[in-house]
Structures are given as structure tokens and as C-alpha cells.
Amino acid sequence: MKPFNISIGFGEKEVTLTILPEPEGYYKVLYYGEIVGAIRPEADAEGWEQIADEEIALGDLPQYQPDLSRERLDFVLCEHTIKEIGEEITAALNE
Image (cartoon, rainbow, N blue to C red; front, side):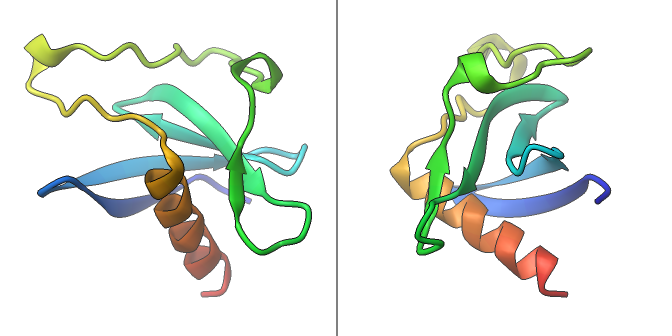
């Protein structure tokens, strides 16, 4: 599957993220071309879970480092954003 973009709410803003599907069954989440983390469907397929940074194959992509001096949001993966990203991935896969 090819990479695709999604938009989610983050506070009062909207953030566009790039999703990179991986053969191992997880999805890398990129913000401004840097890997924020990765998520995968939970075993019961009821929700989504973050995977440990050590399990992510970075390849040529840099790990995301928050930098408030660059006019970007300080984006983080948390329970809420993981759920919202998962819902957007599911919607994209069902198109």
C-alpha cells in the first residue's frame, strides 16, 4: 500500500500527517517528514495501539524532535491522537 495523508484535530488546530504502511502490519506516523511514532490495530481489532520506538524500522527517515522555534505544533502521540489517527486510517483503507 502506498503512503497517504490524513488530517486530524490537535487542540484548536488541524494537523496533516503522512501515514506509511509497513509490511509488518503497523503504520508509521510522520509529521513534517519525521517519524513521530507508529501504531497498529489492537489484537481484538477494537482499537489502535502505539508500538514501542525500538520496534520501528526508521530507514532513511529521521525521528521527530519537537522544535517550537519552527512555527510547528508540538505534536505528540497520546491515547486521543492514536484513536483519531486509527479512525482516519480505517476510513482511508475502506475507501
